[in-house]
Length: 295
Image (cartoon, rainbow, N blue to C red; front, side, top):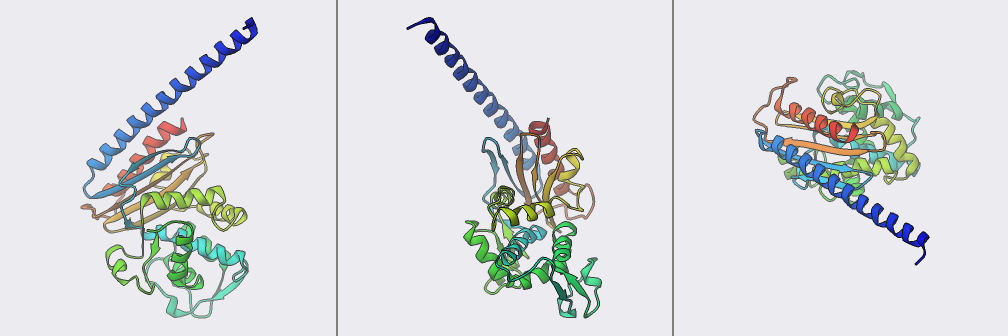
């Protein structure tokens, strides 16, 4: 063996050793991070699930990640996906206008709930209100336009998400509605759905990109988003009912994208205050993960 080959072999061995050591270090760091997240869950007064995936490496943290939880308003992401599927097939059009009817009214402090019979709204604005503002009346209107929850659930099935389902106003889902409310999912499935949108795998790359842009314009930025610097893009959807708080978010950290879903249920703390235990958990998880992946 000549000197050149010996030198090359030595360099290869050093690189292999460095790679192995780096992989071990990353694994150890992830183990420590998982321990910290498990401690947050163990201290929580209720049930909580967390799913984390570091997209460049595919490494995951899973804590009750396959447990079924209520979606609350996170169900608006599957509803949105169904509408974009219909736009791709030209059953619906982004710039089409739709006439509001009083039967669509859903009580609450929503924009569309203040509409009068006969007012019109473009599909584009309806989607923005549903996803970014989390307008319930707009979202139920979209659910109807999408062929009801049955067709949304059909799409989720085709995407391989077997637990993510619309329950409200959906034939055959009455028992699930009583247990979970408007919708149900698991932390893994909701995180996976957001990752699929980011990767261009829901409907197609073009429609996925538009969905991702909508998800990157959330009005509700006091929990997970508050722990990420303002110059970092985050796509997210939040959900909240009395005994459940949830958020799914994908952080575009420089070279270190990661997706997270945190969901709670059976909370003891049912107050609608900033220091609600569910909100505190979401903020704490987000801070831990940004400090690990973002810096």
